[in-house]
Amino acid sequence: MSISNKHRPTTAELRALDAAHHLHPFTDHAALGAKGVRVIDRAEGVYLWDSEGKRLLDGMAGLWCVNVGYGRERLAQVAFETMRDLPYYNTFFQTTHAPAVELAAKIREVTPEGMELVFFACSGSEANDSMVKFVRYFWNLQGRPEKKIMISRNSGYHGVTLAAASLSGLTPMHPQFDLPLPGFEKVDAPYWFRDGGDLSPEEFGLKAAASLETKILELGAGNVAAFVAEPIQGAGGVIIPPATYWPEIQRICDKHDVLLVADEVICGFGRTGNWFGCDTFGIRPDIMTMAKGMSSGYQPISAVVLGGRVAAAIGGADEELSHGFTYSGHPVTAAVALENIRIIEEEDLVTRVREDIGPYLQQGLQSLADHPLIGEVRGIGLLGALELVADKATRSRFPADRSVGMICRDHCFGNGLVMRAVGDTMVVSPPLTISREEVDELVRLARTAFDLTARDLG
Ligand code: PLP
Image (tube, rainbow, N blue to C red; front, side, top):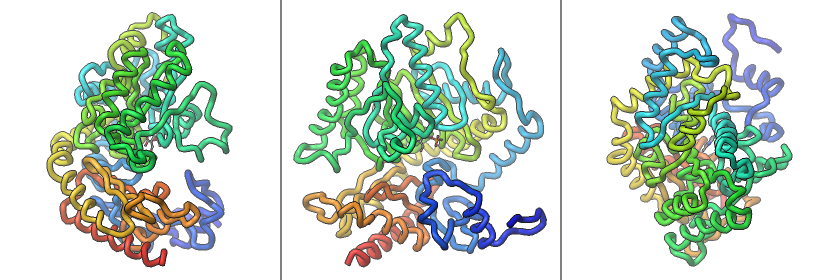
């Protein structure tokens, strides 16, 4: 089957073509069956509409990225004008253009003190892959080429390219592709609800951080290049570290001369109530990576930001940097990202998340804690997680083969709410523009989904 230019395809036609030709990311194609994929037609504010006219409240801002909400004319206008005036030019070989320069300066303005140089890529994965190369290059420039091992965490997610997937600690991502690559090690996640046992969150935060020091000593500090972590682990289930965790990680990295890399792909651009997760937790990173909220997903763009001695060494190296993408700092993506950041500034969305809508969402999510299925509610800013449990007192989970999270996620969709299931952890990350009424709706729809899930479990 093919579709002519004039004919607007029906949902059935799209599903048939999709089944025949489209290999989807992170999708079990065999399980799609006769029903086929969901076709999304349009979006506005915090809502999506599918091709059958069903409205969905997008509690995930797409894939944690549509920070300024859908339907921003300004971003479409800037994309149009830039595409008309300078649809493409590269930033290789001593060349630049205004959108890339202005965006680099703006990123510098909103990142923590000490961040200096901005390198552009097109996705979080590319940013993290580039970061691994910059870390290697830095230690080579320092005359310490043996410092090469990258340490990251179980349940961390850093993307899918070879190095980014090797950094990721979600184990199902590895066996299909013979990963991780050598030289990528893992330590514990600060996931108190799952692993904390009888320890207080504060005690457990120190224990999880200590697993980094143990690993560094085991490998030899002289061989360890960097520790890479999300301030809050997003795709691993919105794992919010206890207050003791980050100060101890910072101390360990400083003591052993290990670079600290913050993956801000989810936490960046206001989601935790500050510009970056590093601001929320007082982290002093050597390198940051960012994507998603940088353009609110309107264009594919990401960045690696180098600080302090890393910026000085790489920026000051007396040779050509042998790294870069055709689309590094692409004018259209850069112009849209810049306009997006201006919207975040003009509408003061970061303060709004910290002082108004973030606390309001957290209060709404906490109101679900009385539900028999909910073992813990946690969150910060506009990130939230609700743990589905078999027994609230012991925090014990349902058997994995019951797929309770998936049942709940399907009820959310059925009800008109997009929520994600990470195992049996339900997570939310709505646009930063969500209104109080829309938060109320989200909470109401989530409770209905929990009731229907409980009914199914019998
Ligand atoms: N890092 C983090 C923390 C992420 O959450 C993601 C994507 O979800 C990535 C990196 C990878 O980004 P991308 O999918 O743009 O390659």
